[in-house]
Length: 147
Image 1 (cartoon, rainbow, N blue to C red):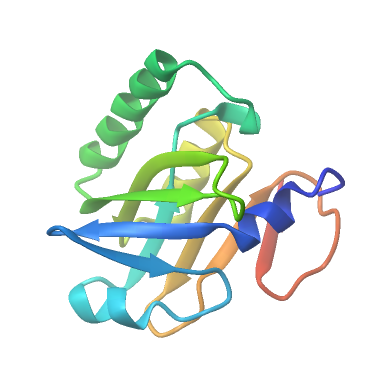
Image 2 (cartoon, helix red, strand yellow; image 1 turned 45 degrees about the horizontal axis):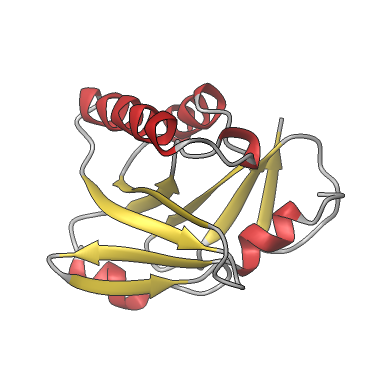
C-alpha cells in the first residue's frame, strides 16, 4: 500500500505455537515444518483481531476483540492454534490464530469485522500468501488484493 503496510506485512515474521514448539513461517515460502505437524489440515490462515486498521489499541481492547474472534472461529468448528506476528524490526507484535480449513468467505468476514488490513492464506504444499484488503496499490506475486 502507499504507506508501505503491505510490504511490512509481507516481510513480517510469523510464529505458530504447537504444543510448546515454535514454528516460524514466512510469506512466499512453503510452511513445510508446520504442515508436517498438522497432516490433517488442507488449508491454513493466520488472522488477528488486534490493532484494527493497523492502529495500536489498548491491551484491553485487543483482548476483547481476540475473544470475539476466537468465538467466531469456534462457532464454525474450525481448529485453531496460537500464532503471532512481529514486524521485521521487532517493534510491532500481534497475537492471533492459525486457523485450519476455514473458507475464504469466513476469513474475509472476520477480517472485515475486525477491520484487519491483511491476513495470511495458503493451501497445503503451496507458498504462504498475503491477502490484503483494500484497493490494489501494487502488484506482487505473493500478495492477493481484495476489496
